[in-house]
Length: 387
Ligand code: KIV
Ligand code: ZN
Image 1 (cartoon, rainbow, N blue to C red):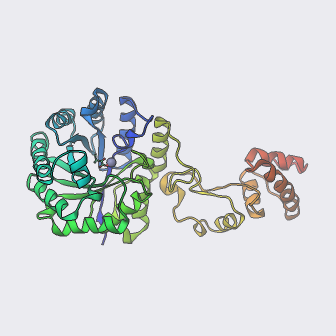
Image 2 (cartoon, helix red, strand yellow):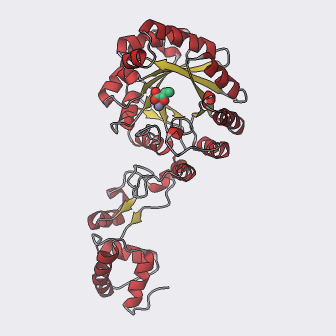
């Protein structure tokens, strides 16, 4: 049976940590409004203590958006939590996202502390955040490399302190899907009163496994996925929102469904790419330029006969107008004829044979033959077919 999975978008916080992609408040508000249309459940609007601009943006987003919960990040430090609490003053539904490193790596070499003191700080931070909001999410930074038994102790303590969401970040993108899935299952089965909180996944893509790990987490009991548009984020990025959403839509055994209006996926991807001045990789799943483009003759012929021969997603489902047939020297007659028809040219079989020979020469030269080139080609045949 599938369960509702909450989509927590952190494009404006973790995503915005991409070097050179910083946004101003107005741009952040435009993206937040698009995310609301997309149907995300939670928007992480920023890290208010980090700069006056981020503080101002969290306030502006809280005022501009009403459906999703608005979250602000803080470390387990009172002054951070105060700033987050103040910034969320106008949010209809506000959540403070606070936490601390729990792996031995972080405890000993970053925090220069010990395991017991970290539990104390975690509990104190959650209790302090409760002064501002009822909804407090706790993150166990570097949970991916944290010993499971200790992690369960930390989580049990923060649930008792009132945490409503337990975020289990694979901060360094270190886990394999099976390991991360087992970690989530261990938490779901061993943390006392875990039912009082939602288990959340937050995966980084250092080994290209962020999406796979997020889905493994859902299959093992997580009910919130933290992700970004186009998978942008620190280093190799975060879990890509569009990919996890479409996986859950297409695969019943992913065991989750979301509230996302998928026809806004492509427009949202484009908006984020333009405002951040960060191109989307052409072969990016779901929203890349080539995600619905077919260029080899065998595939083109198959897709022209029936789209589902080579596509598991209808482009309209994600807001892309149509699949495209890209004409190259690997294309066959079926593809040439298809694109000729789409510009209003109808050739007999004999005419098509002649056109195809000329087309191959052109394709070797140009690499990709566009509609304009096709018109020139038909004119050069003196068939007078171009309308
Ligand atoms: O990757 C991470 O651990 C984070 C936390 C701050 C949630 O982004
Ligand atoms: Zn992160």
